[in-house]
Length: 195
Image 1 (tube, helix red, strand yellow):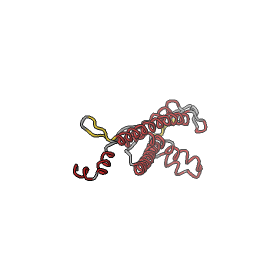
Image 2 (cartoon, rainbow, N blue to C red):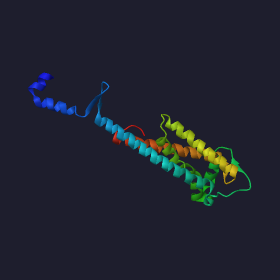
Image 3 (tube, rainbow, N blue to C red):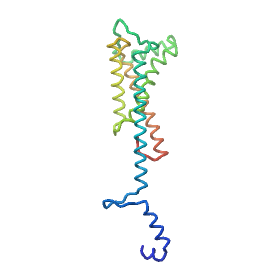
Image 4 (tube, rainbow, N blue to C red):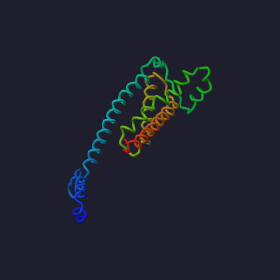
């Protein structure tokens, strides 16, 4: 290598330029450009998570309004407690009488219970730093839905419906699938690690 550098000075200059971005610390070499890029990546992830936390707070506030206070969705105090503990009973009923209740009623009660939990399924894996993001998302979606159904039963502003638990959890799973697809595309384009 020395003979080459001596015979061809421009090669030595070129090799020295390649070393400009490298620093020596504790016996190990670090590329300053790589460190800078990693630091930038960490900052970007931190900002994305912070934005997701803010959106999550707004989402929970909107969800609480729809589930407990919105008269448009029948959230008025009833004289009796209403509940359904038989899985798929209400789902099958809405499918059977979908023409009678109309598309709007069908969509709100079935599709709405799925769609309304998709943001939760999307944002939880963005915020949560875990290797078991899917399992955490599914369990947290189920527990959130269980809390809502229980409060609706105790306050009598709705009913405890096991079918809602099923549909809400499916919504969380659907949201996670959207997150997974978006994150996979992002990694493919930018070549970065998971959020």
